[in-house]
Amino acid sequence: MKTKEELETRIKELTVLIEESSNGVKNLVNEQNKLTKELEDFNKPKLSNDDFSKLTNRIEDIIDQYDFDDVDNYECDFEIDYDNRIQLQSINFDDRSNLTSIIYEAIDAFFNIQENESTDSE
Image (cartoon, rainbow, N blue to C red; front, side):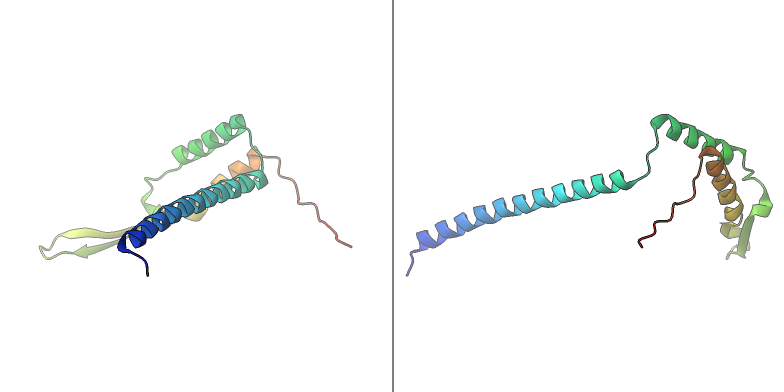
């Protein structure tokens, strides 16, 4: 049978081992996450900083030119509250598809988009 001191010493040793192991696992998980991110980035299409800047500026210009003040682009629901005041219950932007289409067209005009080459595995 072990003494109280031996048990306490062993518990302290195990606690240190657990902490060291847990730090090791954390480091491995962090390294795995970093490598996974690098692999995802490696598989992404390449775009230079200059082209990215041009593209984002073009998208910003499109959004700036879009008429968000046109009330026909929204669906509004009103309600009457307890004080008999009319208040806006909800508002939905209904012209999302048009705005998205305009942005897609700008991206299409910006890039030289190539058809995917078919890979025959015969």
